[in-house]
Length: 492
Image 1 (cartoon, rainbow, N blue to C red):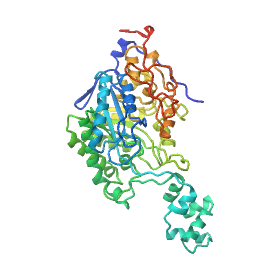
Image 2 (cartoon, rainbow, N blue to C red):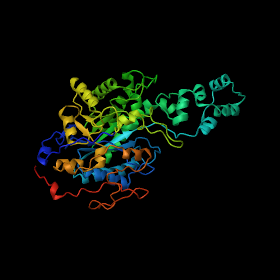
Image 3 (cartoon, rainbow, N blue to C red):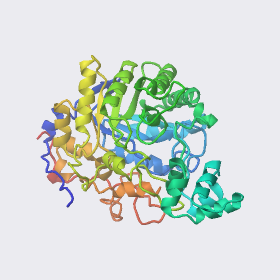
Image 4 (tube, helix red, strand yellow):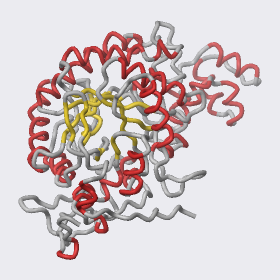
């Protein structure tokens, strides 16, 4: 049975104004008007070349109309390389479009919402190919394969006969012939890792990444963003350096001190580029969840090191890894939010044991307490199944966090902050936490919410248009909030 949505009492406008959730907070030199935070979500609306499109502008403008304290723009690539319909910032030619995005958000929120850009690096991942192609073409044959085949009494005289023999093996026999890495590539597709020091570009990551991230941060500042979030979480390059699975032997892997070395060097390079008056934060994992991965005690160490290095905020997540992702179909790539770690990253109403609502707050509280005991005041952003005013307010009051991240709740209702602050919380369109949106993301389809994407009769906001998905079946932005007289609550 799915978990029912928790009941919630909504504050009057007067009570909301006195709440912790709608109180201001400083992130370094930057002040947020409220503590409502929309974490990064990839909506699949950029061009194939990584440029801002009208659909990207519509997506973020719709969130901005709800006037949250902060919006973090989707994971944006720091390299000037093709990466599909994901935003990029690896060259100056991307700055004009990003500048327009900033202007749209600031205008739509009437200057109340601060806009951050999440910047990311990722290693190569390939689609899974059919067994016949992998064993017949892509597998690099080694002497060990030949010896294992001969041990199984398979006749091997040359490469063609070896490949034919491989194709005839049963699954258990293949497991005895292939290495664990080769089996992973067979069943899930090839994927680079930070441990692949035999690949020159992977070995060179500690030299290459600091200037790439620093350049991206500089361009973000030039585009007018209020801050940058360094993406050190989930399944991507920087998170992989922080992982216990990082076994590099070049001084950037092994011990926690060595694993955090590159993230600190990236932070230092970015800070030199943008200066001390520009908000610079990071998103990290409080627990990787996967076997052999980093745990809370690692996150405590990383958080303290990053805070001491001058991070202006620390946003926390959990899981979201490739290592335990479910097997993709042939022709598709592994998706890091399908296995147990993915279910912890975006918990649904079906998650067990425990509840999806505020699922990550205990880890956030432990990290925040650890920083405060060390004399560090870095603000903490917590997220994960937080969709009610009661839960958000109690998270702040208990000291679990300083900012409340609501991604899916804000996608369900981009006016969440505006409605609750106006005393109209009962009108909030509440997320069901079934991850309809995540399923679209997995298929690289334009992300929408099932609660509003078929509301074709609802008019657009004044001065905007109703854009449709590529198949014309779904609207791409939520209908505007048409406030009724029954919702009026000027002061409670």
